Length: 399
Image (cartoon, rainbow, N blue to C red; front, side, top):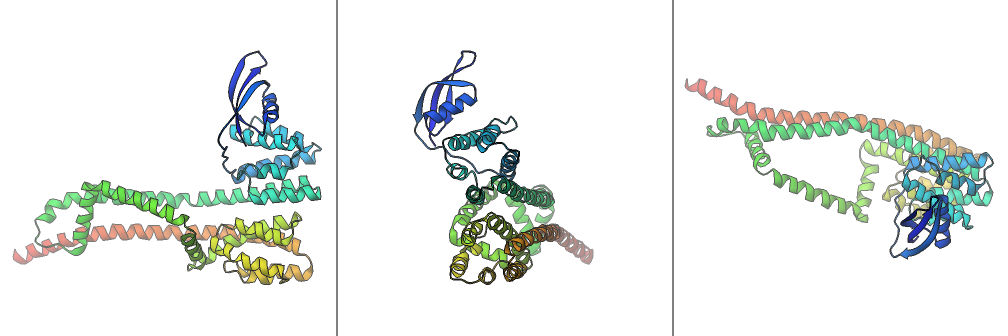
């Protein structure tokens, strides 16, 4: 969507200028009119307007307000206009809402208007609205979308809260090591330099201490380079594939990660299928929400098998990365002719299991970090105490 430089007249007669994204000049006129401005002249700017994706909380709020207003009898256009004029929305949200509103006012379907923004709204949300436009159940679908992203936001918040303590502990470990190597160990330089021989742990510690004290910039440079290299390595599809495969096959953690991935897939599949989207379309969209390239790569075969008439449960049963509980539940739903109800039930169940799995992963991480800290401090203490003890023994033997 292009940018326009404009001049407009306010209600008090003042001439104002600025930039605004719009589909065309008529759209720009409508947008400025919403701001009580009358367009005088405009000129299109070269370049492409980029939008950042909405977070789960923003998506939930947007869908919830649309669903609530539609259920109250408000028309879609008026509902979108009300959202675009909401004082509680940020400037960026108002810009996005205004863009969607302007497109819908020109006859563009809501799903297409959202899709044209290039990444603001996820495919799941767009396709659910597209299905609702065909079925006519816009309010119900909007509220279902709101429920989906509310749960996702709640889960993200729990993960962030659970990771607070491990992050603080990690910072403490780094700070303790830096103080010991940079300040404490150099205090023993004079004592250890007078000794003829030093144990290997002590020599290692003194070498690291000298590096931290006198060559700290080298360590910082190495860390920065390593971080940059790792960042770009993770962008490579093959590297990401290997990492994602490790996530589902790692001892203990792998089982917990499978629960998280299964819950994410089950909720998405349930939301799409209950919105009336064909099962093949559901699979094509849901695969992109798992956030694991190793599992996603296996969906080519799942979709091919399903198109060939293989039951969904059997096709998904071949995927390495899902827990068997979901597969069994889907099979029961297929046999009973209540796949829609079963998908919703298993989605709720797997979300509960996912929250428990995240708690267990954090519970495993905390003692591991404490053990690492204890080993570091213990090794440092040994490297200091052993040579001192040996010197006392030598003095005693020759006293």
